Image 1 (cartoon, helix red, strand yellow):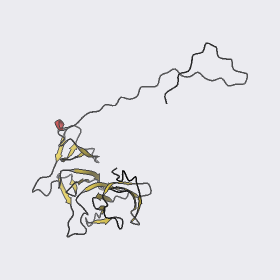
Image 2 (tube, helix red, strand yellow):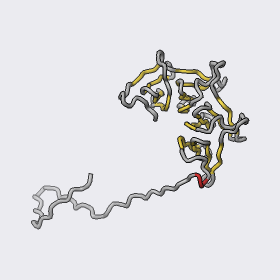
Image 3 (cartoon, one colour):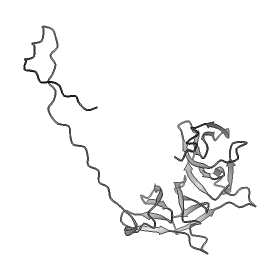
Image 4 (tube, one colour):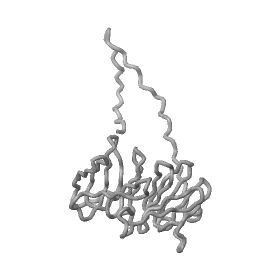
Length: 231
């Protein structure tokens, strides 16, 4: 709160009574100035592939990554390197619209896309491995619209898709699928973990609590006027 101005009095202050503590005068030294924040802008002129940035991440080497609606960008502090979908090249991004970014337990960069599933980036040769839904494979990704990626405290990689919550098995590279029973629409838009290891899921209809050990869901209903939780 702002300090309130006190009226000025010409009456001298009364002397303290014997045994009464004497109050010290307030300091007249002004507080130090607040630090000035400096903002710089990086956009198309500096090499960013597209101006709508949907996700940001810093990897273990210090590179900054920016997911846009048209490409994935790596920034080294001076220049951008852009990655996009290349028709006919299965080692390129499956889709240029990047919705989410995360690092797994091994430090690999993952990118979730709007229509192309998930992609794991190989920093050694600059290629991508695609993880996509296939109707003939129950262990494939549940849906190619990936809204969220999250590496939990045990190093497990979780993916929030338009069809539910997926968990990657690093040995088989297959996915386990989780969703509450009797729920037709369960798009997982965001994922977080609390100190007890429980996952919290922002979805298109409610906030959900998921126990990864018991595989149990608990819902928390929201205001009907704003039912979705995005972050």
